[in-house]
Amino acid sequence: MMMQPFRVLDRRAWYQLAIGGLVFLAWLVLVVWGASPFAEYLSHEPIGESGLVASYVLVFMAGWVLMTVVMMLPSSLPLIDLFLRMIARRKDHSKLVSLLILGYLSMWTVFGLLAYIGDSVVHGVVERNFAVSANAIAAVLLLVAGSYQFLPLKHICLDKCRTPYTFLVENWTGKRAAVDAFRLGVRHGLFCVGCCWTLMLLMFALGGANLGWMMALGALMAVERVSPWGRWLTAPLGVALMAWAVLLWIGIG
Image (cartoon, rainbow, N blue to C red; front, side):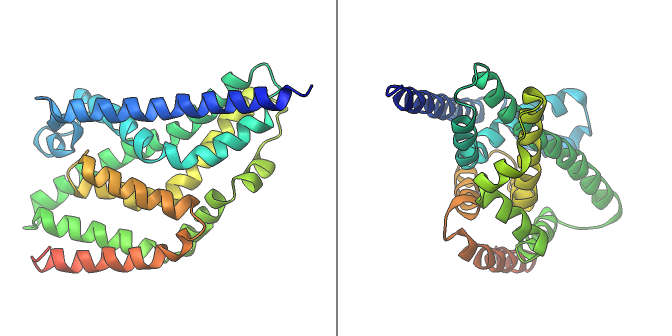
């Protein structure tokens, strides 16, 4: 019995190492992909050229999932770690953790698909009916992202992400373990999307999987969601995004 805490600790360490390895592998694939002749498929630029071609959609979604893994999954580690500690004595703990992560990533995958379609529609309508530059579209997106930082919905979602223990207690019953684990990931993913959807849309304004911007935005979103002083970042970030929008609109940014 005295060895049990050490076994649980060892198991948690292996899970953290595995998730870290997954994130590292996703980064590696993105770096290699970005340096290859197929780098354009990581961006949304082919949308404007060829519309919603199935092959473009599938390849873009593969890149989007990789971006989600490297930008969003690390800041969900506190919840994953708590969940593992809660179910550590179950024989199916590996399956349940996998279902939690799968549910989480599924929400970001759905959002990425909707964002891709929305971007295609917006660019199509604008290019056919208005003489508007790409900078103007990016400026509007930045203004939306900056304004969202001050809305109550943003702070409600952030509160859910900042309190993983309370979130687990409220959403995990374990009566139907597999279903509940996947549903827990889905709900966590929904609140995470609610926190960060406008900031993730900036990847469209920035042209796709720019590794530098991915690191910067991923770090900002992680601080907002999990750091004790992340609540002090939300408003300044909103102001900075709106200022950037104004500069871009007048042609300085």
